[in-house]
Image (cartoon, rainbow, N blue to C red; front, side, top):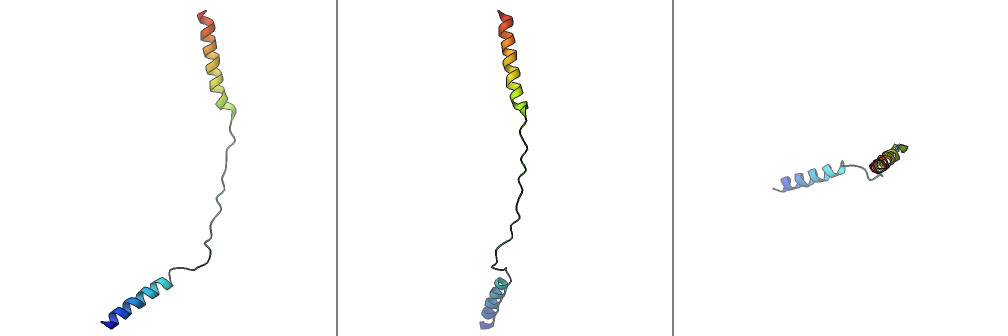
Length: 60
């Protein structure tokens, strides 16, 4: 019985001995690429206002 307990303890100690190093992990730097915004986002509201203005002007 003592041999089984000793073997279990030795197996647990040996498995944690090979688990890894205490050194700092190496982390890769992730480069963030941002696309510049285009001016097409302001085009749709301007066209909508122009269309609404044309509808209001034509209804008079």
